[in-house]
Structures are given as structure tokens and as C-alpha cells.
View (tube, helix red, strand yellow):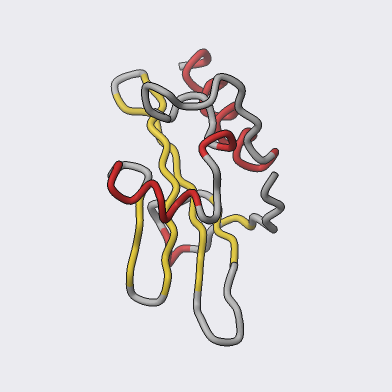
Length: 109
């Protein structure tokens, strides 16, 4: 299981809820997670940013790059993981909290 130090994203990253610095001395790498409610459904996305290049779970062609850092078994339940994706998912606790907070918001509103 990935073990990221997810932090609340600051205002520069308005489209995401969480951000984690995965960089090395040689490379700037960020993992970002964002989720929102659209038409009563939760839409969530991971983005991996390597230097000036970005890879999103919303683009299946980017999945191999995303999975280098976050395997599909760690993508939360509302996210599409493909027809042959994992049956059991174990998202990070911080990611799961964002999803659960949105589920609660849907019920209350």
C-alpha cells in the first residue's frame, strides 16, 4: 500500500483536496487528489505531476503512469478502475475521508 503524507491542498491547487510531495533531489513529483459532487454523484480524480507533465486518472492512457505511484487497488470506490480492475479497494485514509465527507454532504443536502 502506498504511504503518502497527504496534506490539505492550498489555494494554488483549487481543483484538488489533497496533495503529497513525492519529489526527489532530481525530480519534482506531486500527487494530487480531488473530488466533487456533480449531479448528485461523486467524481474523483488523481493527478500525478512530474515536472511540467501531468497525468490524470480521467484519461485511461495515463493509467500506467498513475499506477507507478498509486495502484488501482487504492483508488476509492466512486472512481472507475476498468472492467478488469481490482475487486477489493483499500484507499488511503485521507482519500477515503474526502469521499466519506462528500457522501455525508449528499445525504444532508
